[in-house]
Image 1 (cartoon, rainbow, N blue to C red):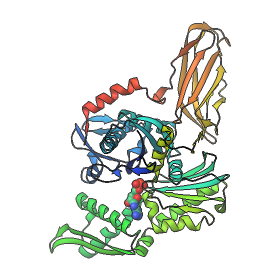
Image 2 (cartoon, helix red, strand yellow):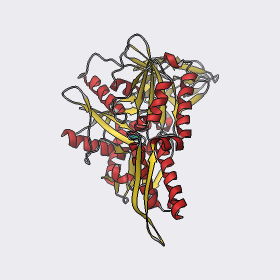
Image 3 (cartoon, protein in one colour):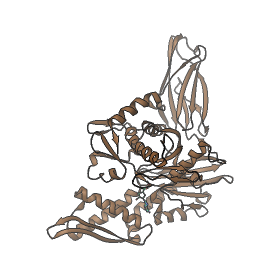
Image 4 (cartoon, rainbow, N blue to C red):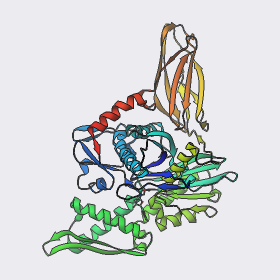
Length: 495
Ligand code: AMP
């Protein structure tokens, strides 16, 4: 069975489509539907993932890693107990945990998945996530855009062309995606949001309010005590969640500190209005980001047909008000649990791939042109932006100098008006060419995952070289993954 995995910045989820053909969430060994994307190194041989790791975040920050998704595709390294780990390796520990509990739940090994990624992730970031899953022994049958997954979970139907706005407001990030949907094709027309605005910022607002109140009334600064802070943050998050359904809640934390007059307890009541005022600038910022994204895409608010809410923070009533007031003609889709909607959509996509769910065909579209830099320093597109994939495209190249036996070509991705270098790619021949003599067919292949593979063939000799983009940007091959995976599994046990 192929499962759907939402590998999130703060939380991860696994879902599958059952015999009744309905997507459902797989619960972990604690009975929770979500697993915090947090890794805690207990020692050099054991890592805890999930809720238990999250509780160490403030107490042992040097041994705890959170928000690894943000580092995907960068050359950031984590050094823990004198060992160095790439973001993909840390991510693989989370995938290992997800795989283990999903296998237990389903009663059979889970080794294939549809894994979701933000629509704005570039090749580098996509490949880092792909590698993470592979290192955990999961074959990724498709990397799937999160907003498309959310729309799929809602069964957004194409009735002519529709403009769909997905607002994914999670724990650490706010991802805004504007898409055009027609005949199974979701075309991303604009992405926006912020990688530094999310639910934790709202928790912080309540935490600051609690700290200030204790400072004022008891003269104690809780922010200096990491263990007290862990509790304040946890209770603040809980209060924030309460305030999405009730008008008032009380933050109660007994024995948070000690003073000369005896123990200090937190017992503070906060109303929804009060919270919304305290967090006003955060709500205003989210509103500004939404309106900017729509404006930049030259779409008028009344042209938006559907607004899909995803991410736990979209449950906040003040946020829902923002989402509904600006798009008067849109259908607001928020009834599916917003924490789960991306994972559920990934599970539906998995079932489509398995052929169990029919009548839905989804295509992906390339958001940026891919090509090479020719000898004159000009960009030569090989696959144009807007192409649906999978896609294979080939172009002929030759050499520019006499007595040449290799050609170096730079592979580029064209963003609006700048280029991102994906790597150098080199073809070496056994023959010496004179200028213009070589006939090299360069093929770009984008597979289902949106991942680029490059190959080159000398048409005259039939020589095909296993060219690869440097920097490890090409999907890591099984032969390379296997030893790394074994080494990591031997080195670290995931609990
Ligand atoms: P996600 O990244 O989608 O799992 O979202 C996690 C974030 O959603 C966390 O910051 C949660 O505190 C927040 N969240 C979950 N449920 C609610 C709720 N009912 N009201 C407000 N925030 C929520």
